[in-house]
View 1: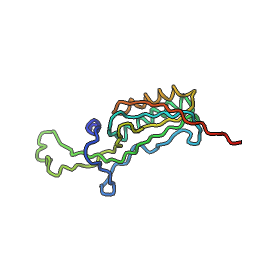
View 2: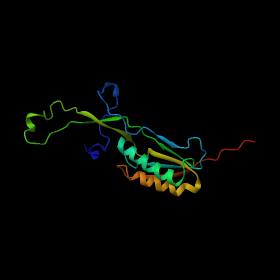
View 3: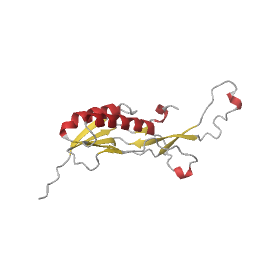
Length: 171
């Protein structure tokens, strides 16, 4: 199975797992890391400039890469990392055998629906893939972490920085 065969979102998404015998479990299980109760000054978004399907193992690889950089250089209390998409789409493959005598074993395009092999998340143009919340002193480190994580994804990336409004202090 090659990931590039499933990169473009074509056709109806295959998501109803209650009808699928043995759907694969998503490799990514943690979507929020860092300090969820912290108050941060900046939000950084890693977005896609084009529609794409991202497989669950690519999302997990990006999560691990971004979290490692942030945890090592910023510390666990100074950021919030949030993976936005969930891999709902089940990917199928009609396996073909390419060895001698394979014509006796396989059925070609007869009953070609395929077996479930992986999962993917569909991303529209401009949708956030990863969000990082942090403070001003860690802004450049967070950008570096998102660039490293974006290299694990099968799409060109864009990093947007947004300043968050300061909450009024009650006295």
